[in-house]
Image 1 (cartoon, rainbow, N blue to C red):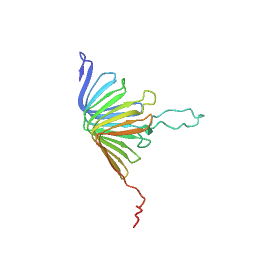
Image 2 (cartoon, helix red, strand yellow):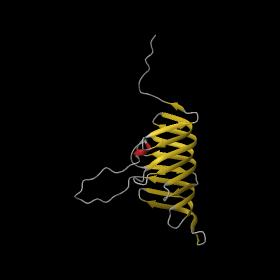
Image 3 (cartoon, helix red, strand yellow):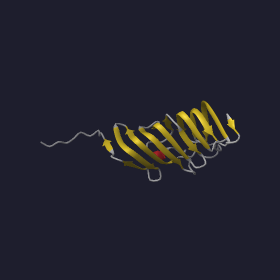
Image 4 (tube, helix red, strand yellow):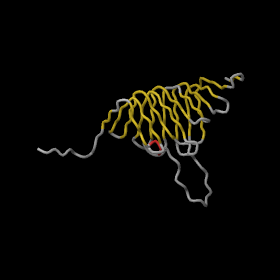
Length: 179
């Protein structure tokens, strides 16, 4: 559906949008025609991967940009939520709501939250900052942390847990107990 008055496109059908190294899909959307602002209604999945670049044959291959900024691993990352999800390409943010899950594929890192706001770097088009709120759970291998909120900044690869954090950590080393 097209609303000339509001300059909005909308549908209740499944939609896929690919731009650079990101592909967003979901059921139902409202968006500006230039797709600088889009709001997916439900069953949202955002895939962030390595941006495909064409190189001249004579040039040696350069290491690809990755989602390393998240700190959970390199390569492809998938973010899902029940929705809605609002994304602004112009202001470089995405707000995910209801059962948000960030899965760093090929590695062990998973973050789960009720709501998550992600900002992207204008230069690398990778995640710059993540702010998660509500029932935050981070899983890395057998280690799990729980908190009311979490803020991750890619520039210093720092994760800060807020609101009663709880950590469950396991090591491969045995305990040395003296008699």
